[in-house]
Length: 253
Picture 1 (cartoon, one colour):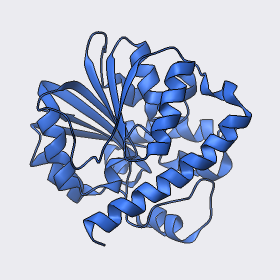
Picture 2: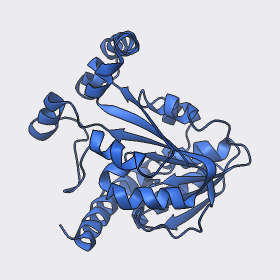
Picture 3: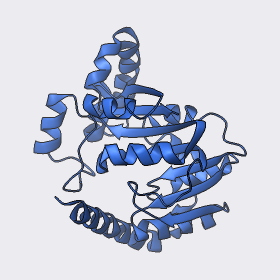
Picture 4: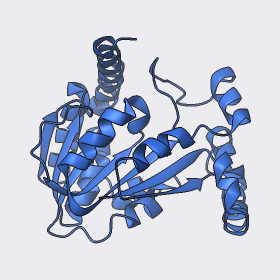
């Protein structure tokens, strides 16, 4: 698909999602307010990924593909000066409502992640959740490096695509929140090679090996037990990270 067609398809998909969310929030506006833990603990990789950002007080931080804006609010509460962008106008409207409801200031910008409208070396930290796998990574990586200050870092949480059985399940079986855009693809080792060609340091860590079944089972006692098993297995056999559901990628300039 041509780049312009891909961009239009992505924007339409996420604007449609945002419209559905806006209807739900219109019925329950109190849901816009939330505690940090509601975001940090909604998936097992979010809190450890946030820890990779370090102390944010007084730093200029970019929420890269902000979606509903919860991460941006958490970072603003941590004392960061937050700029957040998204391709979807609908999601930006939700992020603005959420920032106001939680009484934080966030600068919101509509933009394409492959063509950022920010000056070079604008940000100390960059955060993104489930965004890079929607983009042409070579273009996005160059833009990321351009807007990141020397010594700065970027942290991304992304679906991982090196487990053939998981890929089969993704393609073949129904499960909650399966909706995907036509062109998105999980990251693989070749994408890490692309990032290594741009950044001085690229680190990654896998999450949810056995506990990836929580996508179907929910987050009850069984999923918690499988998560504890994952901690032991992945610390003892790091190569098993290759077969996890998600990765946290940390980039340093």
